[in-house]
Length: 131
Image 1 (cartoon, rainbow, N blue to C red):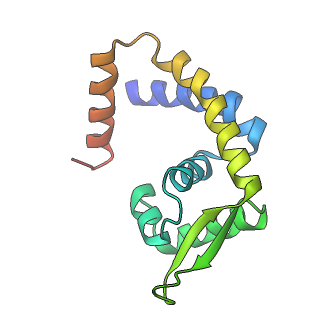
Image 2 (image 1 turned 90 degrees about the vertical axis):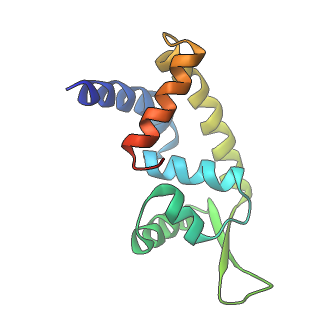
């Protein structure tokens, strides 16, 4: 019950601040944030970080590439693997969406102390199956 209530609140805030204005779903937003923070990341690392199967990640990357937000580039050292990079449009959208997410996070987390915020992150990680 409590998780369901929190999910409704956070989903609504995400849609208002990021989803609708930038036409991104939560996974696409997360993927853009990961690529922005980890330039030239491999699809394998992205799939692991997002906890999605490789075929699902391929579909996500295809959709973002179709919107000219990312590009896939062959690894010069190992031609079998690829790196995922943001395009100029992808960098702009990622920066703008990240900036729009800041007031959303302040709105959602404003009632928590720093210690409670840290505990929430730890507990959410456990629920997601990460130690």
